[in-house]
Length: 171
Image (cartoon, rainbow, N blue to C red; front, top):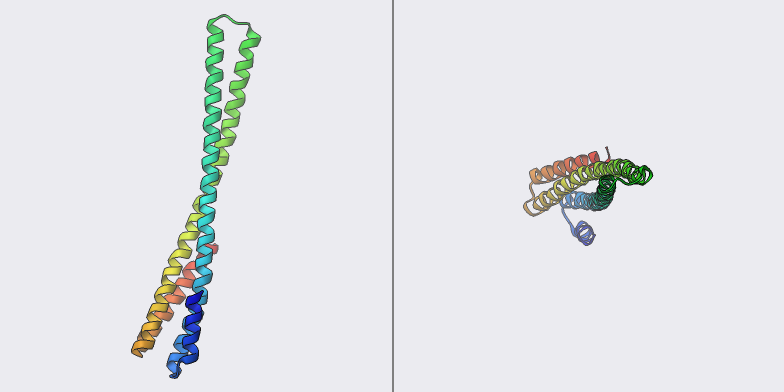
């Protein structure tokens, strides 16, 4: 944000009409850069949260699997000891319940992973757009220093391309 303020000061101090146009464009590009940067960070945070939730679900999945396995061992041991069928049924029922729970946990974990992947793609688009906008500012700065329109045109093109690419993060 300080960068945008500094650029605005350059707009007021510029004497040459070309410098004023370029400095004004730089201020606009800097504002777009700030927006794109914030959005990129937002989606990075979503990536981290979705990954954490997926990891939690996979941990629940593993816990259910351990419980299922423990119930299986209990059932098998009671079977070897010729236990009553109703005692065996308790462990068999537990095994079935844990297997069902495991399916649910797996589906939840996979859904969080899909959400993470979507957010990661969006974050990548915003960050790539951010780089192009920064290149636009650098080229525009060179235009003011060298008084060459080619740098300004290149900076404007980089900024437009960066913003357009970042905008695809909303898709």
